[in-house]
Image (cartoon, rainbow, N blue to C red; front, side):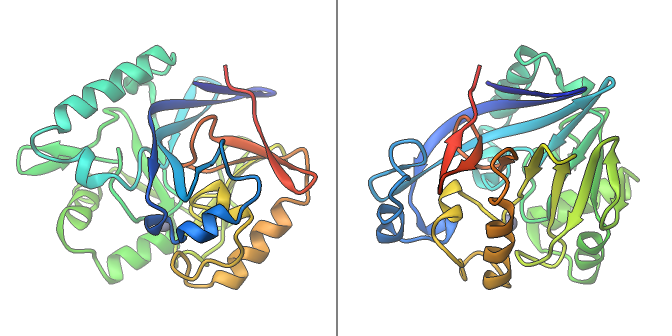
Length: 268
Ligand SMILES: [Zn+2]
């Protein structure tokens, strides 16, 4: 588990599992991964990419906000035969982290791309995994969803939350909880946002799917605007004090950029 205290705000990373995966799903080749001199062993393994299924929770004043919970493994997480086991394991991990799933009041998404733990199967339909949480997404992500609803489980799951009146929207620059602001970025997809905890920490969403993306340059397989995304990341890493966090990054899941390479944040 990674816990980071920033004044009154606590960031807790609830981990399900770390894995080593093929680089193609993150938009890289094995050669590109091997070319990152600081990649192995922390963030890469030979030409493979390290990644995690986890959930970052932002806690402040009794509130608990789950950010991009366990995205991009829907085919595993929501498999009919095994979803109950995954849900039970996640619920236990949240309880062990001191943030039981009942205490989470908001699921905050950087963009709509996978269901993650925004919703779980409920018979033939979908219900929130966090029983007391509302879903919060950027207004442009909501508009894009409404204009062109995804087919299949992804569309069905989010539509179920919308129909249950559980979805709120926020705009560019809005505070999503005190001291935490949203930045609409686009670049990855039309509704994509990053989240800033003051000037102390930034959740980059999928602008860097892997920490390796901080060194591999523009990534056309991942982004609608790869050059702009690369420039955004380059600006971000000019601050050596800022903690940078990605929802799919391997443990410890957070780093500071110092002297041209990442320095992992201490886990505990
Ligand atoms: Zn994405």
